[in-house]
Length: 256
Image (cartoon, rainbow, N blue to C red; front, side, top):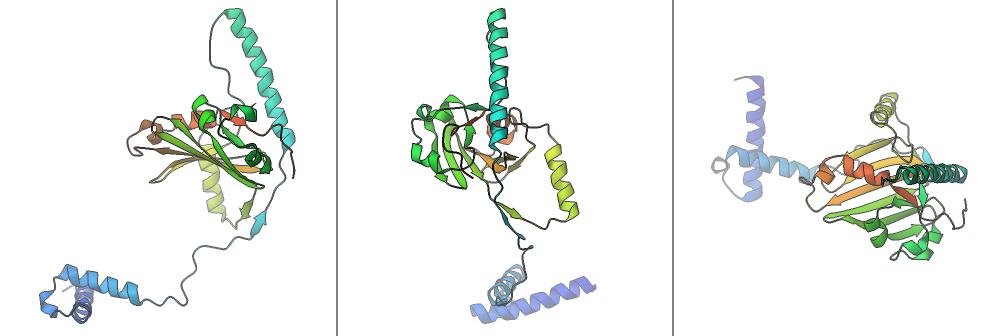
């Protein structure tokens, strides 16, 4: 008998004894698989928890960067200039085409389900996709340093946008920093925002993350059928939504 088989036999023998004691059955009547399950279950229930092993590394601290409102205004101005050139060219050619990507401001009166006090609480740029269905259903929940917005993007698709100006300072090893750099650089910058971004998927959502103006943002998609809906299984839909970001609190007080 090999060493591996001897070890497994010993484990099963211990499991048989534990299983017999725990479940009041003779050891020879419990199947090998059941013995192993009983053994693992018993170990899980009796493992010491007073001094658990550490998980990861604690953060070095937290930071609250100033918001670069000048960069917000520059991007708005650049988009307005492009829009003016686009309209002139479109009128001259007599055609109809979608406007170029960029950051545009949407006044609060165009957000029927958003309460103005929620916007006024937020001291960072409040961004959300500017599609008609999103703006018509958007609800904003604001705090001074963070906000969350929810909306219906389309039939069978809901979205959540989260923004925060607070960040944890982590002691990232060089290998991890390099991996994050490669992930962010694998795609061209986000159209309209000019930011590098990462798309990740989980069982519940598709998340597009980027940083801009001294804040971090996450746009999340939640599809009714997360596994088969192309809007969630492919990158195009969420990238288009993120490229249509609008500023919702341009006229509000810009505190730091």
